[in-house]
Amino acid sequence: MVRSVWHKTVRPNRQAGSSDIMSVRVEVGLLSGKTATVRVGLEEKVEALRLRAQTTFGVGKARLVNSFGSILDESVPIKLSSVQDGDALTLQICNTVQVQASSFAFAAILSDKSVVIWGIKEGWSDDSTAVLDQLENVDQIQVSCGAFAAILGNGSVVTWGDPAAGSDSSDVQHLLQNVQGIQATDFAFAAILGDGSVLTWGDPEAGGDSSAVQDQLKDVQQIQSTGSAFAAILGDGSVMSWGSADDGGDSSDVQQQLKNVCQIQASGAAFAAITGDGSVVTWGAACYGGDSSAVQGQLKTVQQIQASIRAFAAIVGDGSVVTWGSGNYGGDSSTVQDQLRNARQIQASHRSFAAMLFDGSVLTWGDAEDGGDSSAVQDQLKNVQQVVSSGNAYAAVLDDGSVVTWGDANYGGDSSTVQDQLKHVQHLQATAAAFAAILVDGSVVAWGDPQDGGDISAVQHQLRDVQHIQSTASAFAAVLGSGSVITWGGNAINGGYAVISNS
Image 1 (cartoon, rainbow, N blue to C red):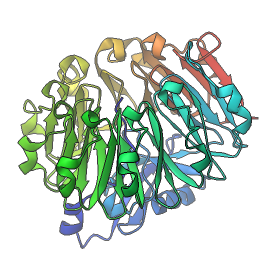
Image 2 (image 1 turned 90 degrees about the horizontal axis):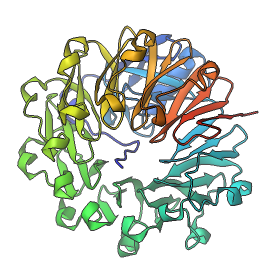
Image 3 (image 1 turned 90 degrees about the vertical axis):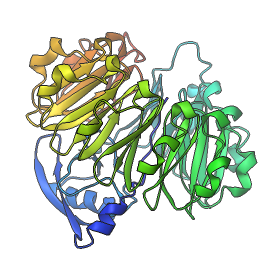
């Protein structure tokens, strides 16, 4: 499982080369299609941009989402974020329902801060019913591949789900107080406490045992994870890692280089850290991108990094792209290297990458069958606004609201059966093998593997006034304007779908 977190993104070139630019202008849009231009200073935080957009549109609580569907980290200044002058962002109005998903289950925080749980995988020794009465005043939920951890309003934590995936926190439960945030590997959790220390639980080999570095885990600012290891950025910019050494849990070989770290990205079993001067430090499994020595000289003024399962792709200051890791997973971009100029953002499938350029075109590389070859639709990939990936395919929304797909047809790479319905698309979401599109009228169109959410026939008539969609590996959950949640796909209930009321 490849994970990402809301993170800082260093942009040293913009600070050094554009000192005369004190602000940026961003086009912010609602799902209704209404747009407005919002200006924000480079020294202001992303939160200020969001608040200004809310005031402009006259809406309540909301969040900013970029063209790849990623939620922006509000805690960082604009100059250190991924936001650039002229960017197009979406302001998603937050309903009174917040949905979180593991690989096989959903949990929804309702307006009264209670929790509804559904879609637990058959055969699990699940304990969700035993903790339901404790799930009150819930602020946020984090998930591993099969367990949930909820932070309550008083700073305590409640866990449930698959015991093998970290649902048993009994050994540290009495210490889980004043918890500020939680991160997860596939089978373990790590909680940051108010004093900057960290508590871990779950599979020891997947990061559930941090005893080897416990004394050094102080003033922790954020945590990133691979499938079986954690990496924590401390207040002084240094990094501590633990968990499976083969998956990035041992950073001792590069420890002296891990200084002034601003951002960490993770592949399936390796980490890549961007430092304050725009250089990159990597560690973990070499075949997963943990060894960047072949391209180290090119990794300067790095602005952002994206990861497939076994490779990394970095956008550097001049807009070019540097890749490393397993070549057939996107670590080799030589076939398109000459065209990779003025890259704006990069998206990844399991085995390939897609780069959106500033001219609105898209370039792809990596495994051809898994989306690395977009030649069949290259002429259509113009004025692209958003790119989303399933496990082995991509879908792009164009500025006219139409959609272009490519990659493995079994994973949503072929949208021909619904192509005439894909008009006025506002946003896309994906499971591992299907896509779902929200249209301007609030309806939904889906395609791909029916078992993974590509068939919405059972809930089509209920999918009206959809505000946003969340997904697991095999199912979708759509939040309606009323606050109700409609789910469908492989791990929903009641014959493939569920309706959750928020009354």
